[in-house]
Length: 179
Ligand code: ZN
Image (cartoon, helix red, strand yellow):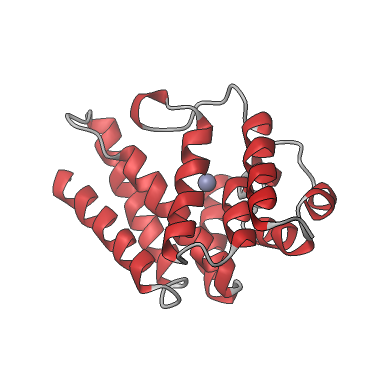
């Protein structure tokens, strides 16, 4: 087992390489790695640095869904638990978007407590990226749509970490203030 610092460093470097050159959706075409750094840091803060595997999984939570990274590779390079957390946060990309969204709402209550924290941190970050000053009608609609769906997913995830729940509620409030 890698030491906590090595585990998180490995995860961050692997995430940076795998998502290299990809821009995230929303504000200013930020590099995708900004989203991963934000999710990892929300998880580290929420748990006060007590769970290195959770933070590593935060760095890598989109790696199987969006890149050619596999579960086996994550298990080998990081740990079995990191791999299994990332798998829990991976949508079946063969399904159409509406179906994936419906499944996330349906599956959320059945996730492990740690995967639920990753889901909430992911939604906090994604809502934040969609909050921009002077939004176009299209950006406003996209924010309303995303925030409404995220609330339904997070309804099935909350209760494990009050600080993270509040972060999410604050993000939704900030979004609603724009709508
Ligand atoms: Zn994500």
